[in-house]
Length: 337
Image (cartoon, rainbow, N blue to C red; front, side):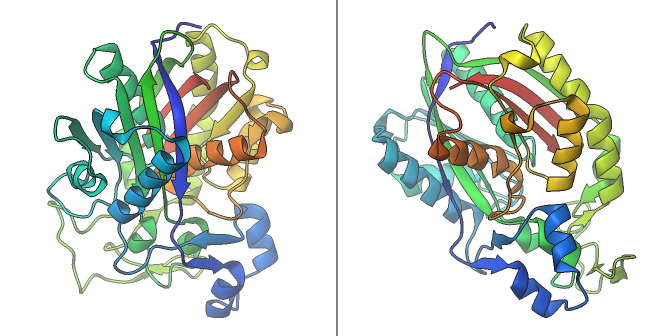
């Protein structure tokens, strides 16, 4: 596998303090079949950002945690990449505000990019490119989202799935090992199937937006997140197996040479279907969003943190990372830890 001289050297995650268990949601929506829900979605509880808590706040805590746990000298960071779809402001760039919060050097680059569930993989690619170009040697990649702020209070479908969270990853230049070749995909025609229509430059937030009710009883409107679950499932099962196989080919590897597979944690049912579709052994496939839910751009790094803490992956292992979702956007890579 050809490497491009950069490596993940430290990771940390941060979750908001408030935790909402299924029992609390069941009290709001007593008509739910909670046992069926937990089995299909795979979520027992999720962390929810406070009313005044933002992606920047979560990012700061994740970054402070990675510096504290790793002992990495923050003065050596020369670039921040910040992935979020819930920025604090339309402008300025959240990465710039994070530089100030963390007390990092003013002689660094700072960049936001707006991607969802494929964001961590794209962030690794951007980091790889900056390091390969000689523009960075020690880079801080942040993923942070507060999607729950985009959910209507009566949207029990999406409130079941999504949680808030952040992850901080330090990536450095190296002479050996590291991050392999990437494969990407985009199909913007699917953008309408996972969207917040109002609140941007095209459609202003509309206090009088008409409410709609789904066949399952969820309530929402165009000011909040809309997700067409069946269409998302169709997209994922059509394109992601090809993505995995193309990524193996690009890195001249076989399925058996990959030590572990970490996919975006969309929901347990979808992941189980993909694993079986691809023939990946269960013991080498991460499928656990039980305590955090779908944290969008942070599901992959949070999963990696959990696997490292449990000793299921270790230094030298080759792990395939597969991101997919809103956009439609997808991407994958094989990383040697």
